[in-house]
Image (cartoon, rainbow, N blue to C red; front, side, top):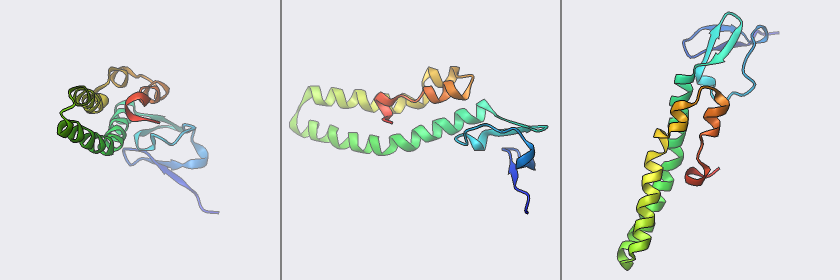
Length: 119
């Protein structure tokens, strides 16, 4: 039977059956191997999390541009203001203080703002 290896973010590898690893692979590219224990590097995990926010918000911003243009054409001041507020919330999502202050993967995952980014 072939041995399966796990490679961490720094290129270190270990036999997958001989290491303790996180139960969730969501932040696999932030894994760091220390002896026989793999943990998540929070700095790298935060970068991955912010990149995911940017990926998800791109189509949301595009859709909101359409909403804003329709409000502009209709000269609907309240719709324009609401659209600007939503776009600002989307732009500011990667800089949320909950992301910066997260010191565990659970807290980082909880920093996903469903009211802005959806599920």
